[in-house]
Length: 78
Image 1 (cartoon, rainbow, N blue to C red):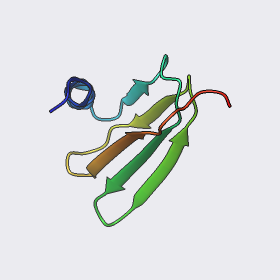
Image 2 (cartoon, rainbow, N blue to C red):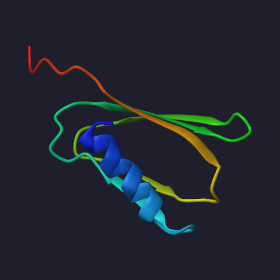
Image 3 (cartoon, rainbow, N blue to C red):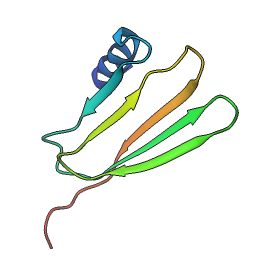
């Protein structure tokens, strides 16, 4: 498991139910695609622009079944 995956996993685990989980991507000069899969088949997809954060409230265990974070390739200004 990559270091960043471990950091995100620990942050989610250490957040109490009902509190916000805040994942900050400051310093990443790229667009970030987020996909959250929940029990019951609900899927939320979000695109985060550079400098913004992902914020969600932690619910009961088993609600969030998968979290995928992808950094899009950034080739600089053209």
